[in-house]
Length: 271
Ligand SMILES: C[S@@+](CC[C@H](N)C(=O)[O-])C[C@H]1O[C@@H](n2cnc3c(N)ncnc32)[C@H](O)[C@@H]1O
Image: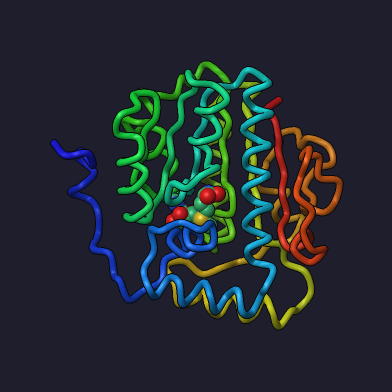
């Protein structure tokens, strides 16, 4: 069996003419797994919002900080929903560096992200990738990678970094997140970052237009809507906030004020 395993049969054809959010992000991270259409879309989005590379850096720093805090809290299992195309500083990279025994399962519905993740993890028995829509929580939770690698009797760190704003259906997203939260024990963590909806902004409107032609439209949410995604879990102080508002990341690279206000982030623990 090839490195993609049984999931190879379920992968759809990739349309090289349609930009993908996974490949655009890979380009913005300086990665090489992207096509000309992705680079064009990224350049258009960056043209409309010059802060975009800084926003990507801030997301990366937050991700690293979450994995570090989880590891310090003794958590060694990570469920990375919308894991993206592997690039330096992703969940697997940081978790493996901090704790060689940690277990990581990445889930993505972009075939290119899945294929590259699977190849990266092929030789690591403690990590795996799943090609799935995170909205199909029951299917994800019952899948062999999650069943085999994640011990649901011990705390798990669930991450959605720069992912939930690509899921426009709030009701399905809420239901899926409730299922993930219910499936893990007390002490588990949920971390997410989310494009922040403020007042009308021509910049955001232009970026939204770019993403409307990709594999996933962009839907910014406000602080109340983002807070609701954590359900009844205890948000760590200072709650859902922008990168710029009381971000505790030590040594965090300072970015422009507008970049620091563009996203909402939060980290919560299951009581
Ligand atoms: C901006 S990238 C972020 C990737 C990664 N979390 C990171 O921080 O590097 C968003 C990722 O979410 C994935 N995604 C979007 N909607 C998804 C869904 N419903 N289920 C699974 N993955 C999804 C995309 O395919 C893409 O790889």
